[in-house]
Image (cartoon, rainbow, N blue to C red; front, side):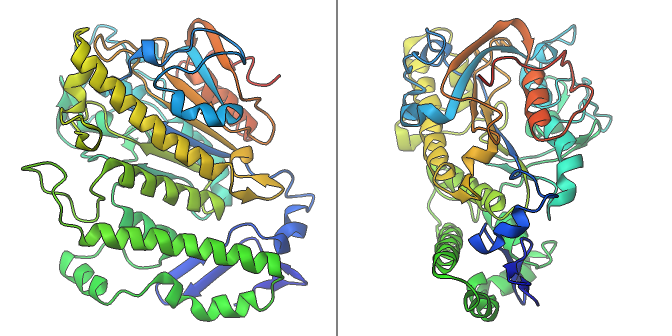
Length: 449
């Protein structure tokens, strides 16, 4: 293959080998292509991370507005990153409420999160909700990348049968919807995600064939060694260093996946750890975040979602001293012990988020960092899990979106402001301008100053 056009590396260059295709990160040698009139500003990446079962709002919501707010217990791990994110409060998902349909708040929350639409109550095949914000963006932005979008998760994603008071499991487990009737279930196996990003194998293999391949598997770096040598011989010192750092990071991800596949520890007494899934949640979510970062860094996709846990998740967290299932703890009945345990879970999630933001803001992307060119939402469609409240939702918006957002503040919006107005604003800043998303009635003011 040809790596060079004139004296410049093509942005879409891949290191290729049998069963592997590794896209490159941004290099100085690509600068003329990025600076071409048709290229414009660096692309805006859009990401959504979903947290299930709500939070303890008293330990989440800052008391003061603006830049001088003090960090609450749950948000405290984010304090070193104050300058790269804002806390948004006052946003609602009214269509996650019953509206005459009775129980099923968890299913409605998951289905409504990115669609803003009240889902049809059914546990059969006649599911219907709306097109999600990420897929509206992917329909436009996704034409420019290898993958229109990337859906990741850290919990099972069963989409058939009933999961919540007469609602289909598709609503509970899928926040991304390509059409009103087509969910995009998240991929929860890191190996499958890795091979999708860096390999060219047929992923629809029977278990025996996959096992044979796994036994003889080489590192993807070995498979692309010839192309790597050919490319690096054409690069300057700075770009050779970037390639080395990037390929080292890819190999480190690969090793962590291999380690998880060999690890037979029980996650919890009596519960067998799924093959390929890291034993602790920290390892698991960090690995999935790193795969998302790799996809953004190489411009394989510009749109991604990640589900920390499906709504109603019963995950346990013995590593932080919480062996109780998550969902029952969210129905704390205002009792101190379950409130304390749920607060620990909420804080644990934010600690992992903080580590990810550190990586995003130290990863070079063109003339800035990846976080400079990203809009990243970390939120839930339930605020108070004890009462299934869908108003005044917990929302963090990180990144600068190519300078379109001014982070570092606590912004309070008027009661009744649709969450979907945030999505309208984000998509607009990425060059996607739908007439509406779900129940949106405009765009959010105040994100830039």
